[in-house]
Length: 317
Image (cartoon, rainbow, N blue to C red; front, side, top):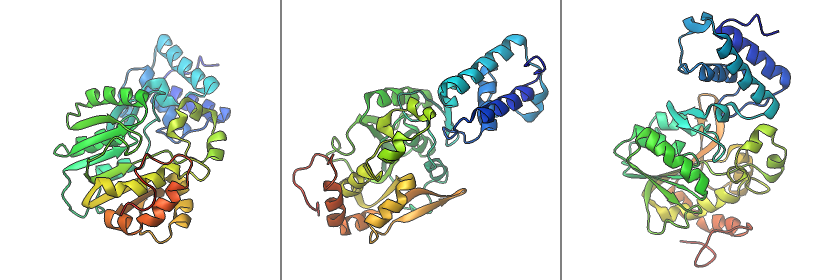
């Protein structure tokens, strides 16, 4: 029944229809069937992701069509995210290598990077920045790309993720990025940053257990974050002031755990970023506010099962 498929646009339309009929889940870099089908077709045909629409009527060879259909079949039968099938994901206008060693790049923080983190930085000088829980390195390397005069540290606990990030460092010629292995801030003693940006795990236990099959290809370490999704975020809020300069800024993504965080810390002044598509669970907070509320934050963080290594419990300030 695929004999009538002759052109690039025929294959894209066919793939999108098959994906929707199969009830696939989207959200790994692309959020709909049409975009994923386009991504897979162009990859199989060795064409650029921004191919002009005029080429949509170009005819494909039988061998090319078979290669495209084989990718479609894997996407449907195995539920592998399209970005893992192609080995590539676009983030903040840059191409990243992606595979199951780290989450597929998809954070809305890409929009902040492209706008220079304004108006949140307010024109303040940034010499050093930290990408905490870097995964594939997408936030750190994109930040370094748009700010070549910044020194960026990209940190992760996973050796697999750091190996992938190193491949992306070479791919993007990110000479102003240093990769470090650390459980959050545990290996960063004495390091201070003007800006800390982090997209830590924030999916609740129940949500992680119920995720569609597509997410099973991603490392659970990058997703699961306790009963309310805040196990890591609270540790970050607690310890970030020790690693921020006097006028430093923390930007953190917590996704749908936003409501739980606001309920736990209603007194902490967090500015929630409104993106082009609306609120996405990303907040901005100043160091001095983290210091002022550190006692309460530390109380909440210390109550979790996996507290960060510390010399003593209680407030840091």
